[in-house]
Structure formats: structure tokens, C-alpha cells
Length: 77
Image 1 (cartoon, rainbow, N blue to C red):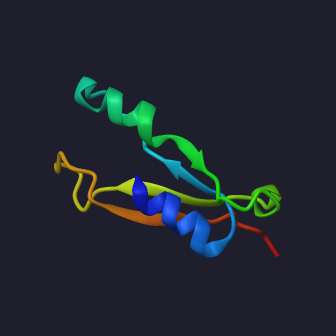
Image 2 (image 1 turned 90 degrees about the vertical axis):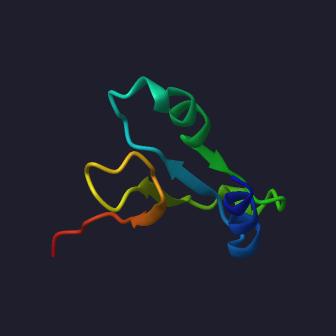
């Protein structure tokens, strides 16, 4: 989680961390901790829209969420 705090300060904007919902009760604590917004120390930068990053895993049968992907809005043109 320290990396998200650092990234928010380096980029100068909030970072929203998304942890996907799962039926596995072992992830309930991680779900509660990881689904949050990390704000930079500079309060004026906190007014920008957050950059959204989702936790994910390499394979469906993996039990470890071990990397991140950006979440972007699709704009139909």
C-alpha cells in the first residue's frame, strides 16, 4: 500500500485502488483494505480526478493478486 501513497505524491493526483470482489473469504480483509483512495500530501492536487488501478492476477486459478492494470473509461466516438 505504500507504493500507492508514493505514486499519488509523485503524480500529484489521487490514486484509487480497486480490489475485485471474490467469493473467497480469505480475501475479505484485503478487499476492505485495498478498496480505497490514496491522496497526495498536496491538498490542491487532491481535487483532481483519481487515477484508477485494479489489482489482478495472472491466471484464473491463481490465489494471489500479484499485479495491477489501469482502469480507463471507454469513450465511444
